[in-house]
Amino acid sequence: MSVSQTEWIVTISVTIAVLLFDIIIVARKPHEPTLKECAAYLTGYVGLAIAFGIWVMVHHDVKPGPGEKGGDFGLQFFAGWLTEYSLSIDNLFIFLIIMASFKVPRKLQQEALLVGIIIALVFRGIFIAIGAVAIENFSWIFYIFGAFLLWTAYTLVKDKDHDDDGENAVVRMARRFFNVKDEWHGLKLFIKENKKTYITPMFLVILSLGTTDLLFALDSIPAIYGLTQEPYLVFTANVFALMGLRQLYFLLGDLLTKLIYLSQGLSVLLAFIGVKLVLHALHENELPFINGGEHVKVPEIPTLLSLGVIVGVLAVTAIVSLTVSSRRERAGLAADGQPKSSDPDDTQR
Image (cartoon, rainbow, N blue to C red; front, side):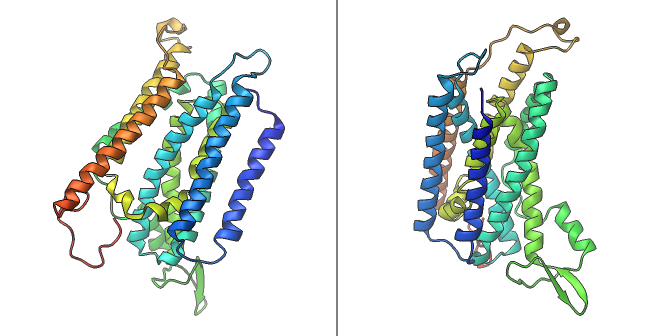
């Protein structure tokens, strides 16, 4: 896939413009966005992603660069975007837990989410660059990517329920080594009192979101490189997957807690991509202790089939999750099958 310098400049410029729009226009005043506001922005972002995928099909699938074969780059983008979007929704669920764990005021959650999404974009950009260099120089990296995704899929299968505590080891370490104020001071991360500097709860929330983003970036980048090896498509799929994530958080609300089989659905998805990566690694094999360093004749999974599997798994996951959650709700149970809590402080989860 031949991507001109102009395309890269325009893409990065538009990404920065959208972020600035979010920061300056949308988030200039802390507030809880309305459902109408969230739906409008989300519709726009999804529409942009679909339009971009069609543009890739028109301008890159039929006009390959010199010496290249015609590719299915549009399908690769859609497969990567849907995969990254589904992983981002799981990331969003963790954000929900973090907000509830720290009892973040609703009017401040929008700004905290915006910072979390920017951090996610930065981490993914770094890992995209590292992944591109590794793939360019070491074909055997696909074995590592594939094994990592298979292991991640295995851990997700066992993940019956996410941890309700947003305080990870990094946050607990911050509490240990810094002076912490329990009172909220708006968006301030640090305050000074009696010549001493304190970190605020917002600092701990951002720290928790950032470390969570780092872990999710480790999962998402190998996953999308299993669907496309084009850095431009990897980058744009991640950008579009993160656009509108903040609005999606408020739009879905309690619906996120009803996606009870999301982790299991993602485990199937990551296992499928992991197998795809291993097959690709065998096909490109250069390791001397495997088939004498020669390529192994194994079938490779086409992009169209990958896209079909991704859509099918996500659809089944959503339908089964919502159906079971609805039945449990009618039976007077929480979405996870446990008796509903009578504690008024037990809010989001």
